Image 1 (cartoon, rainbow, N blue to C red):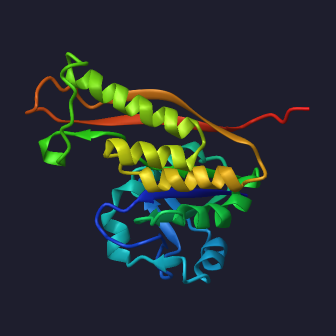
Image 2: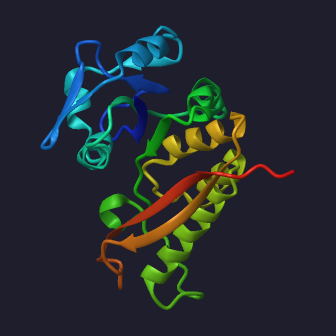
Length: 230
């Protein structure tokens, strides 16, 4: 049996730390069938109430960051017996990602487990309240956004939470899943396994030409186990 840990940001409900599904839920429904929640792991994590809260069903249903991955997971795992551990991530005070990294690192070290991190990248435009642009160095807004996002991807590939936090502080880039990504980096830092993150694809919903435009960026990365060196 495989366990899939799915981490996504909270867009609608404000809270600190991480939250698990309501104790009333046993499955998540998808058009391809129901996904069983791993109640054993969820209960084990939830016992540490200092670090884990529980989601109201209505809050869970309103959030898309986890939901949008479910059909893809169901399709990819259609021939496997697996369970899901959904984790919604709220705000993280400085260093709190290290707490969750320590808690989740043993699960990452288990090769039968798999982690999925949900995040878009730059949300650029007035409707997002984010319109930085360096017209002296860039002739096109979309090229500026591309470089901005590439710097973020480089920071993530560095496997350093401090590097990524510094990038976020300096650029204020509107990466919605920045906190789940920080937890992933903290997991890697505290795992016995050597992990590397590599970005494999990048797109923008549109190419912004002027300040009346807007776009959302999307980046896909894979995490692989680095072969030990002798």
